[in-house]
Length: 492
Image (cartoon, rainbow, N blue to C red; front, side):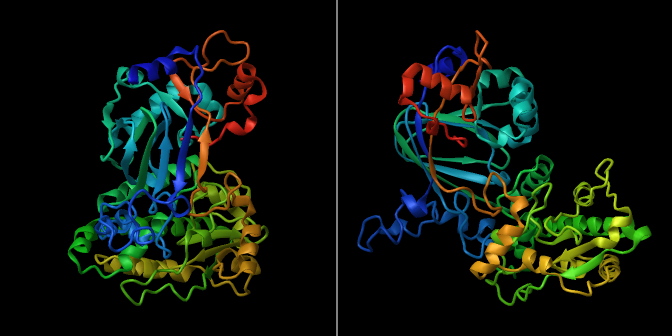
């Protein structure tokens, strides 16, 4: 089966169409694991309802950091599983997980699945080879690797020095992928799998790396890394599992504080000649945790604005130009410069006379941020106080600020926020921590030819989705039987 699959992919003279029911939300389609809603108490499967190996429970189990991500408890496809129904050659293309999370995949029944994996430490070399192998595809879509739509044979990767591991998953078996590890594969026949993400403490530096990469590539993360770290740091860790993750959280909290401090200091020094940037404390009565289970900040990703340029979630702070409050920025130099329309060299902030029109909106003072770090030193706290007193408070309340940071408790508020945040929609979807709803993806094609070419466009590669020429080829082969609706742009 594997040999035939890559013959189709590499050959360039055969187009194959398969159907794949992927990313099916268990909340609307049901889970293959027993749940309290579908399993009677006297059922022989009742004991598995609360099992930590039940993928409905694992992401939110004690020790998994995803239990701190959402006050609602679940993010579809991340901390709530998705179901996948495949057929022969139904493929999941090369990708790593959102926010570089761990993932776990369970094979419920049916034909096996071939898996290929590239270790996380080799991810950057893998991406370099990918760019060099299909430069024309990256030129057309720089975010190609985020789309789960391209396959390259392991032979090509191995020839370029990329380590590739291989296994076949059969019914009743789990597959776990580690942070930042690229993986891909295909089904051997009709089957059903279920998958979800989780995060151990050692994932935290990978999560940080994913955020930096997403900002560079202008891709929206699934959730706010800073909010997660601050939430965990606020909790009182007394249990065994919490004691094990505390050193990781302390280290990550130091990075969060140092990054925020550097950004606010840059805003201070760059704006000095033209006048100070004003400060605005986001009005949020839930900023302080009063119990071990209470949620910090009381906000979900759907309540957080995103940077107009890099799409980073603005949890700790943001910058607005009051002359054009419909856009909002993170504190990165290039993003703030783009906000005010000034040139930025090497990512440095360039404000000039624009500084007097800017407002720093912040959820926590620097002193409060450093207070989350048990090992904070006196010098760090003193510098934090200096930064906090530098930005004069905004004298007059702005409706724009209230729209950006008001919690969406009513329809009117949420509607106003979505209208104001229109410039930050990604792919027509309001920026939120949730992924798009479940869908049936179709149209997997291999070796398609481009107009005017006598050979395959990219020999040795399998490209899914975004292929108008595939649809045209299907129509030529099958007449009007194939419609444009058959090409789903997010095939995975």
